Length: 301
Image (cartoon, rainbow, N blue to C red; front, side, top):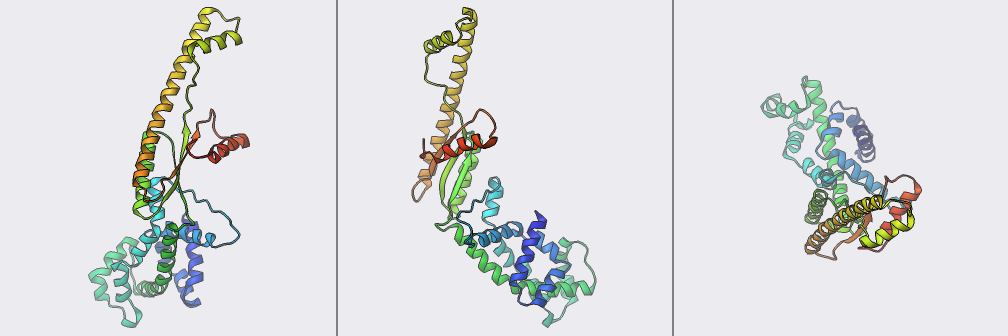
């Protein structure tokens, strides 16, 4: 992940540096690797830059972005604003002013404050390295304007009509609560939940009565003894009741979440799609086709 992030950061420097000389100074600076890896929101922002680049490429008709779990997803979606906040931080602004080459390098000023900042990067000493830091900060400041503009473009795109958000959850109570929090945070950030997919929805236990099940057993297995047939019937009825209870409880939780999201929504409430729990793991084209059919069915089916 770090190597991919740095590679994307390198591409940004290549495209947006004010001059070939500034580009080379940044890429060859000993502090560049640290900043490109540790600037708040840098990893997520680089992914956002790549998403913006791909979205502007006419070769793609549809882009699907699969985010990590809730907490990481929120970090991912708020990365543009967080990076702008980091770029606008008082520490970086102060460093840029304090270390500007045209103002000279004041070691007394460094002793009073900059050393605390540099301490996060490890033990750094020597005037040559301080000179590199001064030039590096100035060169980065020249790039900040472009970063801010593109971060604002990404943040605006997230809230536009061309982006849709689909929340995916299982019907478990904890998973639905987590998805609800994510939906709430999206709304607070000005983003809209377009659809909600409930995966692994338990099927019902069926509507057949005990008498109907008994008749079916007798027709299929006529050689079974009465005691064996009775024991099997009891097991089938019990499992069917448990399955029906699971389905009912899951449906109640989903309906409660649907009501919550509908009450919060300022526009049309999100569509709900229930994907049934399959008897085995999804492997092969047949299972994928089952999932595709469930997703393509009308909402609430």
